[in-house]
Length: 412
Image (cartoon, rainbow, N blue to C red; front, side, top):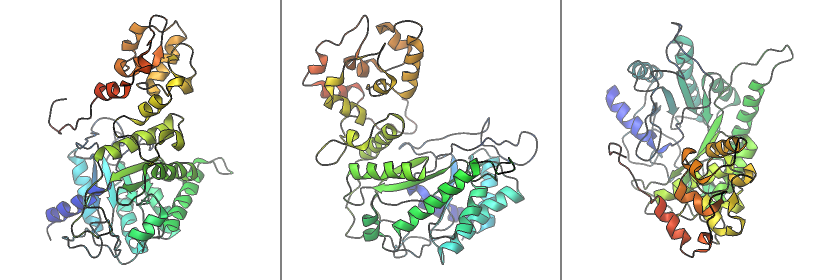
């Protein structure tokens, strides 16, 4: 099979993995004339697909052969799809060639399971080793690790990769047992625990005062499929909160289930609305940066997020008694709960009000959404009056920024 045909098959097979972000690592460059590549500076481009996924990495599978038969996976052993496999040298050459053309900033490499987890993981690690040690590649490398692989191979992966990830696949271990009985949910979490320990160890100085060898400075992440089973949003966010707390993950990625050819009867016939995936990302942000917990974010009896408005707005509409908030005196924790205010804008408000009182005209200079924020705040020269009591406030907020899917080449 020609290399171009392999690339078409294995790049397409990798599109279902959303966790291809390139961030959180240490800065490296080849501007001194040594090596090739960089993780920062000029020549690094960040491109995004219409659905928001980062495509600035060469994102491929080593192979889409797989000995497992996970019913939700298009690459399962029983799936009737075209198969291909790269060797180590081909992946290395593609990465270097694409980088020199400024198509990519690094490599995201995953794989189906060939023979067994150790054999597959050894091949994946060898790609990273050759790039680093033979070609002195200093660009970004994200490796998708195999949970059942030996700890020694996982440790080697962390020496070469900027970020490691292990997919939990589904929100609950029970769902994983049903849809992917060959995979062990507990083994996945044990591997996450081992990676967390190695990452923590790499940040501590030894008894001699020297830092240990670098180990996945970008941390670890995971991904779960949304909509392949009946798990509700509350349970999904509970799982995410547990993963963040127990394993110090950098990110949990959510991927809306996409129907696949020759699908099992256990799977739904159509994808969940894409806005559900979007709301989960917004809720995830509230968990990590805004001080919310799952019980506050998901309050409906059905355990699902409101698809009509973002989770913070939904919370504010259900807790109108806590508004309006005085922007000149409210604590930071409360400011973060005001619809329309983000972490950056809250920091600007706190900084500005140390100098003088914030007034209505200052909000535009602070680059906040006036239509979102005004019903929920009070200022020396502004009061929302009875706008919080309007029965159609939710409908008004829906009209502030109606959902719209832009095309890649359409003007915004």
